[in-house]
Length: 112
Image (tube, rainbow, N blue to C red; front, side, top):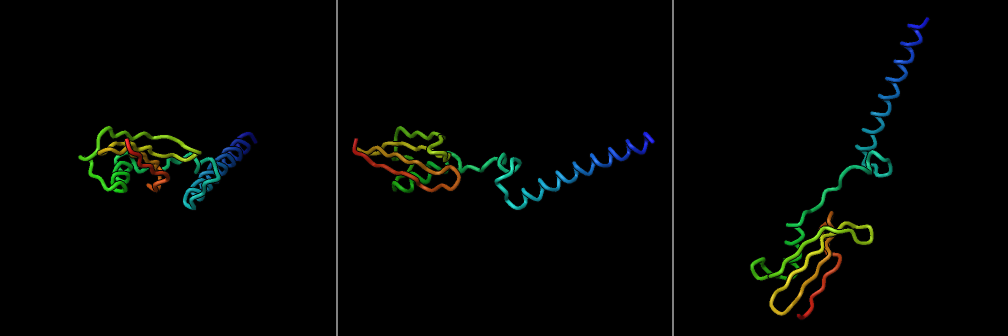
């Protein structure tokens, strides 16, 4: 009798684990973002080098034409961004670039 009970328990536990694994795979394949397994998946960021290229292209400048270039990874209003700052000629440039999409969220050009 004990052997039958133990076999039944092991079979039930294995079925629960198999069901949970199948549910997680299903959610991940569907791009679910509401379950805890999916929300922990790391987002892919464009990287500092790409953020700098985007800002320089928008400003119409080459890397060799700028000085005091800074790029920081930050969060603003719940959005991960790259803050890019540099100087060229008599101007200061500032950019906030979405870290996932590469979209320019803010740009500013001021005279020194």
